[in-house]
Image (cartoon, rainbow, N blue to C red; front, side):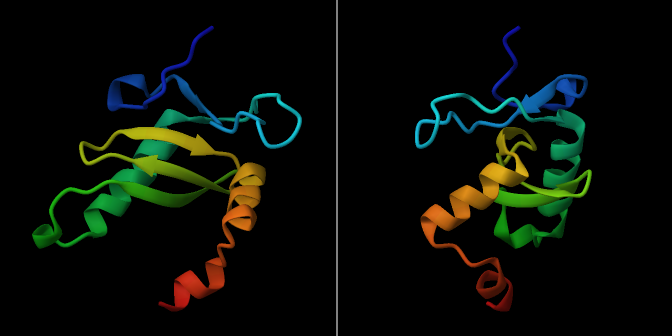
Length: 106
């Protein structure tokens, strides 16, 4: 079954699958999924926190689900383009040299 790459309000029943393809490790795609409604609601909360003068934007954001911290990419219209499961989020941050503690201090 082909899952949508983006999650919109109309796709709330369809899960978003982790976008990690495994090209850096074992070559297998990740099967972890999160309900689209969870990711979309988290992105909408992020957008609501922005001041109106900032206008609509897109970008990465983190959200918690079932005890894990997921990474997702949100679009200005409230859609979510893709997600990384907690394990692949962590691998990605290590690969990029990202330190979440430093990011929170800024």
